Image 1: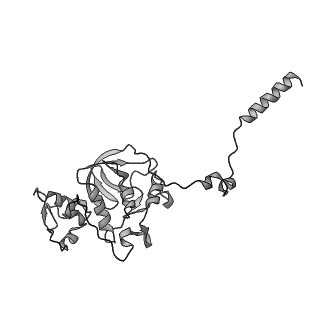
Image 2: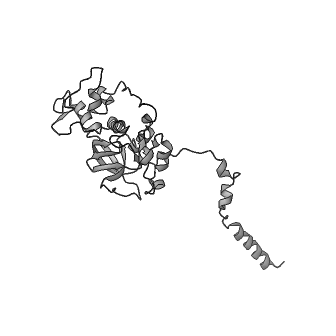
Image 3: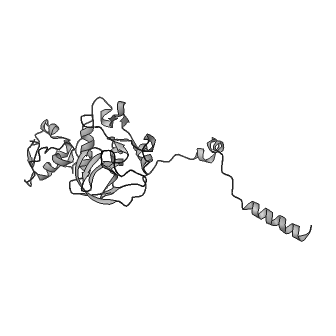
Length: 252
């Protein structure tokens, strides 16, 4: 064989060896014998903490909406019961147990998300100073369902897979939410932990006033140092606006 022809063959073989492998066809990918089908399923995890806008928590509006120094914030990717529905008070109180008025929060707008909803509320992830994701916490606790994401025709958000995987509440008829505590014959009662103030077991002034264990029923004065924390809870922490007339007395 002439030397020039031999060199040409070697070069052709070398180039052929560097060609990329063809992508697997959909049928091959779906084959039960493929490596991907035999791999164990993994639980979706949250994305790494993202930079966001610092703000101050002011009050609970309900289980998926809070008031902050930056404005009213609708938490991305979750839905909780509306006022008057089973579980509304509990979902609202759950946020009040995590945040007190004046505490710092971080508001995160993921790429591709709308800045505001049709009501003008900011759409954000909400992270506490300890890094707790309020949306995920509400879903994990059974107070919320994962909703308003790419599966519902809304913009995708980075943590929607983790929210969906954590969901234990159920969607109800006509778009309602059935929290974990409302799925049985009666919502379970909760007992506050030893380091939790007694008033935080009550998600509203109405429930406080029905207590049979001797807890004071109000009113609570925001200017009285011994009652200020109780006032803050019922006025801002439960979502039920215990000082509805703004006179500085809660649970009148």
